[in-house]
Length: 307
Image 1 (cartoon, rainbow, N blue to C red):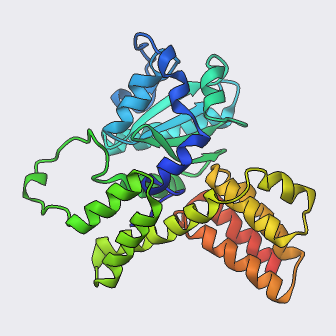
Image 2: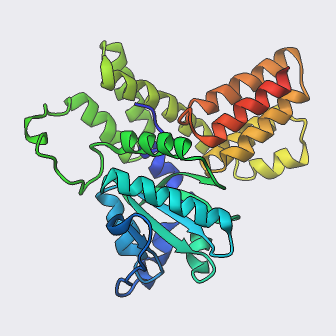
Image 3: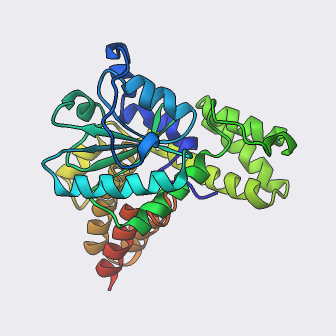
């Protein structure tokens, strides 16, 4: 299973970067949304209905939060494209639109630095995000990767007619997921590795492989100094400082900054040092969906730096 910016498996560790609970206690009665593209699967979100339309709804289906402004043509274009896509998918995910001009508190919670910004939320936690307009085909691949990543994992997901005949989840796989959900990374890594060592195949093997890779990153990244970015910024040629800072930036949902940092190090190094930085950058790319705009841009910049 290919997962977007460390998705459900890593959400518990990454959710601190966007504190969605900060607005929970401010929520009052749900506000009615204005008609918009996407019909019944699209809602206008304010502080009043954030909890019901984003946090609670994301326990049923992924919620794609579009934070934009009526002053931004790119926001309007992206809203139209997402509206068409959510209408096509008919309830497999929901579109939540936020006007940052009238809801600055929500923009602050999501850490919006530019509009439009799009954040995918599932089980009350942010999974992945991007900034700026994207073509419809890339958005489709991005959405499909999110739907794949959360399939069968949301607590209140609607039950399909076919689910009664589905086989029960492998107990070893369930134990690995439970350990990861509880934040016990070492136990989760051991459990997933056990599945691989035991000859797991198909979707189970794919999930285990991706999870082992992501958990290894989480263990390393959560052990980096909190001031790693400041340290690296003060010594832009320091390879170890740059690698630590890139980990922290990815963990903080700033992969673009992490990729740019390592590409700059690739440009400024040679031989073994360059190979070391390049290997780390490729490792970080693997944490994301290949169609992620940040990965596509990062790979292009890396190619330019190398050649």
